[in-house]
Length: 324
Image (cartoon, rainbow, N blue to C red; front, side, top):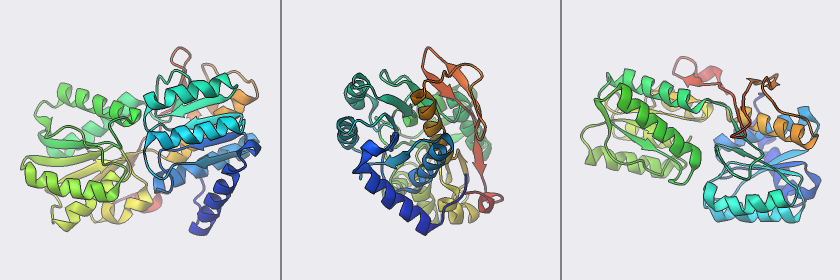
């Protein structure tokens, strides 16, 4: 995926906003969990590039916060404008299901990302294998902690399906393979807000002397936790891992206030969403062996309506400057 400069990205955002008001002119509208954060800015690049390569008009929009009702309202508006296809990364899968069902009843193609098992989705698209991702993450944390000690998991919210699935898989794998590791407290919904993650990290360090690692399953959590490590001079005492945009986290990764990113490129997910939307809109079959040249071959589960790729990226101080 090509890297956009700030001015080009700003222009892309302004164009997307303008297009949202005339969404009927677009073939696909991708609705993210929250607008304007680097993770979803990067996804927007993939949505646009995938649309261009597939010869459809694809844009991205998102709410100003992670409240599910804002996503519901956006979908209602897109139904009224008769947009042919939508894709969404849900803040609350259950809360969205009635409006997604309505979209299907109105003849729209519905795709999801990070929401396996969404009843009204034509396909859910994942660019990583969830179990392998959780296992990889546990292994890196365990290696850093010597296989023992307390950790905390940060999620975007307690209703975000994918974050909580990853958290469940992480804990399961940890208990099976590293019984001397443990959660110091239940998962905390601060992974999409830098300030909340920073404050929470500082508070947890005070409350739990046995806290050795923060593991964030949202892209802003590692930034906030890394800032807390820097502020409180906890380098080498508190390790920070998680999903991230490498360019956003680079300074903290290079200074080792963030230990490692275990992540994937959200532009890949955006690219796949646009590509699959185009295939479905054109009536093309998606079956075993389905492959997207820039991404790779997918596992196709027709029963679960799941397309799953696997492209994990480890972000370290040695490679962070070479990444997006």
